[in-house]
Length: 322
Ligand code: AMP
Ligand code: MG
Image (cartoon, rainbow, N blue to C red):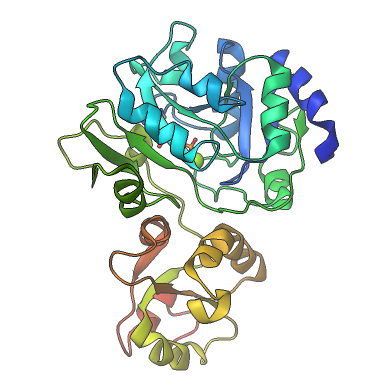
């Protein structure tokens, strides 16, 4: 374990080709030098991740990200200038140093500048760009606390840099603006399509079947062992009444968290807590259509279905309902 003030040591280990778990504002990342094929191979092994699913490359400062943007990609440049450091990832033509293992064989790379200062200092100390997928084993929740990161990666990495709980709590918004005319959202996140359209005054759309898919979305997403049931706000009371027949259950709602950003921040940790507590079901309030699109995306991927009155037992199984 490295304390927050030991970021320099994290950088030394990374520059040597060792694996280091690093904090980011989104989720904890499993970091390795993006220049070292062997280190990247070790990342895929530690995560048990399919090799054609490429990694996001993290750089320590905005200027380093801008250096990778070709002159004709003005819109991509403006996105970085507006949101980086922050929870945004841009797709760029791959520079010569990007080893094929990082790109998953694609001619492009995904690049981002994480917010936490200790993480940026660790990357700068490493002196190399750092590939860092979420620090979970494939099929597990992305860690958003150091306790979760330890459970996932203890014994598989040289060090874990403690940065406290993640403040965003879901993975970054991934955008492709290489057309230079519009922004295509490949993966929704905290920074929303509406926000980008407003801030940049450009067309923003969610990716459709025609777009190059973001390879990760082909793979099965994490679903907690405790079934997640989506509940529209106006059905929450009815769902609660049914859930009261269960020994113990988790509720994720505006009433519990106060706002959707806090809900998002605590989402994966709440999944993890529910598993450890052995709860029967997670009732998850669905944000209204068109709001909190990152949270909605992760909830839909995690869920077994949507609540219908009198049918909660369908999801929970015969264990609790006769
Ligand atoms: P993770 O690091 O676990 O959050 O996953 C990284 C995500 O970024 C995956 O969904 C990848 O498929 C996606 N990604 C990484 N590189 C690229 C790229 N060059 N083009 C499109 N998507 C990418
Ligand atoms: Mg991941």
